[in-house]
Length: 226
Image (cartoon, rainbow, N blue to C red):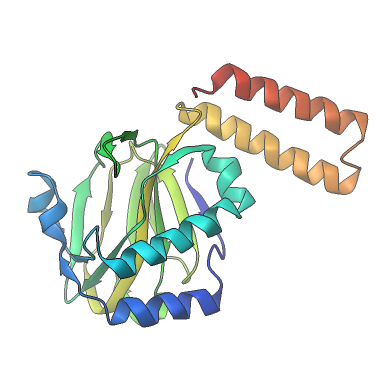
């Protein structure tokens, strides 16, 4: 499932993020890439221990926990601390697939089920910089408004096209879901969204809505790995 989620951050929050990020100490992004990715990765990133990145990442995690569409789609078990990157002057990231396992602070590991990019620059601020994601329907080109986020399976081949003018600034992170199978997560998301719509039209206590809620939670019990 490839899903765009609007306004994870408000315009005011985006402005605050950009004020701090525009003055941050950016480093060569290739330093954090694996041997294969290093050949195709040409961008800038904040160091994982950069105080600005850590503070903004914590704020973003709080906002994600308050975003029902994200919680419904991802069913998060663990979230990798958000990182921040910048593309300018022809910067790009060639075709690659994210690593299956990533390390978390403290020594734990995370299985990357879902990848996420939250845009922090408006589309008109830069040329190029589309996130191209290959799925069953072909190549999907994503370039969202600042504050909006795209969520997609980490198994997807994806790339960032060259930024030929301006600067593309974004946050990115990975999610280990309670439900590993993407098809199962998609079914659960669709069912949950339908229940929410019916609950608004009928009533959350309507017997038909309650029955569907029971089916939803029983499916989560069947598929979730805690």
